[in-house]
Length: 578
Ligand code: UD2
Ligand code: MN
Image (cartoon, rainbow, N blue to C red; front, top):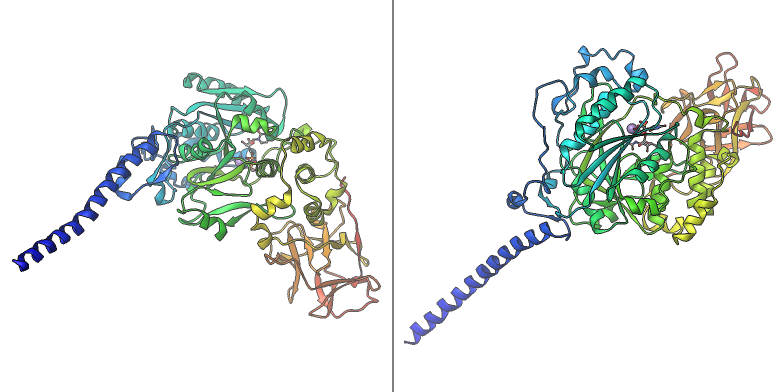
């Protein structure tokens, strides 16, 4: 009896031990199903689901299936390169900065590669998302490239969110473009609207105008030569639906300007974010550990200090509350920093979204000029824009780094910034130091604080009165000696307190082949150079030699120092904008 009773208890214990986990699994399973639906239907957080649950994502919000995405086997299908041997790029590359012959042969509805990380197919997104106006500003763009942008947006965006596409023509002067466009958009029954500037405004003001004219809750800006990828829109809208002060940025893939090949920008699993060096050149940096760790999944949106400029989504009202772009910025450049600093410092956020991919044609060169807008301006427009941004958003310490890196900017006329300062005051924005410590903390690793310049300007040789010149070449390359032109740029040389000799963002170094332009070692600001005022020589500390000009060939090299040789004597002459 006793034995049986014990046996019975044992069986009961074993049964209970088995049933409890089973019950637990069952309850959990149905709970997770319920949660799936709860999240899916409401405005709750987007969620990464299990591989086997992917089928639960109903049409659309996880993996919106593109319309018209048939494979025609035509040129460029699947995002492949247009056969360049058959390419007659004629003069279009000069006119448009890209091969219009190739573009004209490729379907406006062509398929492209799905370049999203694999995980992206498992994200669930809310169904209630804000509506969107896609704003595309353009100046003299090629028709088929512009239209492929429009078609890709129409084909690959869930129609319930896409309210309109707004094409803002920044005073294009190609007449056939105007007629062709007006005729073509009729087929879209008002979903695609064209508005036109009365005069050339530049892309920055034209975008602000687009934002004014848009009618949806969220505006998405695209350049006029893009192709959006699979399910690009929903992942961009989701963070904005949760927090209206979040601006979202897709990952920008490359489309080749000659062959229109669509290429992923980074390898799977690699995340980058936007930063800057102290001359305000835009850079991208692998996601720092601190930000990587903040998230559970590599394909989740992440914080970024800034963005490349062209492609992003933002709540329209919020963008206008921020004053849109500073209307004092001219034509092109720097507006990405203005908006980024403003957003972060005044209580918003910028997130890059790995599951949203958009291709962009990087042109070989800029095919347009800045027109009347550039007249009467002294100095480069882009640097004038940078100066405005720096003067409004940076504090004294960081302003100094900018002027150290771009010393002639001190003399630029940037116009009135009092409205911008008032806006900053009104919105109660935080300091630039706060931004550097809390958001852009990875900038210093690559671009440390800059020591002051001891000397800067044109570096003129006393014997032949010619100037040091970076020659517009990519490093590593030889530094040349040219007629002094007085505009700075490639002839603007800086020697800082730590012995670094720089031209623009590059550094000067010496080896047996001569005096060279090299990439500055990331994370360092020092160098081997000393300017000796008495002998006017540029002395290399470790090699114990001086920079000399060859009397016949004018080439530069290191020679044993000779204080009486005028081919080794140099003067720095400050360059002011003109
Ligand atoms: C990048 C950005 C671009 C912009 C620019 C700096 C990306 C992919 N591109 O240069 O969007 O932020 O940096 O300002 O991030 N356009 C006009 N009026 C003009 C000049 C240009 O409407 O006076 C249009 C142009 O047709 C194009 C857009 O503005 O649709 C951007 O110009 P871009 O493509 O020449 O600039 P990009 O890509 O070199
Ligand atoms: Mn562009």
